[in-house]
Image (tube, rainbow, N blue to C red):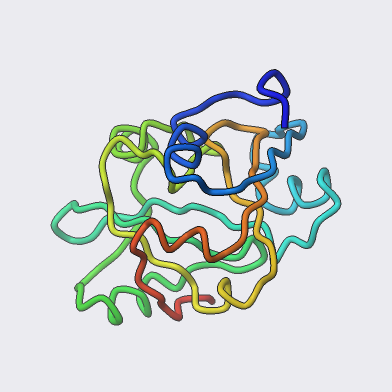
Length: 159
């Protein structure tokens, strides 16, 4: 893993600091391409590409949700599980303020603000996941167990 082949983002610094093994995966970013585009570019299943979604509750508090690339988040179901009245997508400006990352480049690792992390239950069943490395067009391949460093809560919120 050569240092010159991929960007050293706050996410990469976090992974290194926590001695988490990862494999960098660069691809050509496409605006609104989503997980389907990155999966196709990397030749991996879209189900194994994990989206980092920034939500906010009724009190304008942030929550990160890690979801399969081929699934959506049921915010109603998730809010119920978390004992919240309402959850909605955070706007781009607020998401950037909390995470320090741009839309399309949001990683759960190395965020500016420590937010609660929710992991879809079936992510734990995968052998390898591909999650954003903190920059558009940059994913890292890691074992799902590496997510435990984030002290996540396991949820069932796939729609």
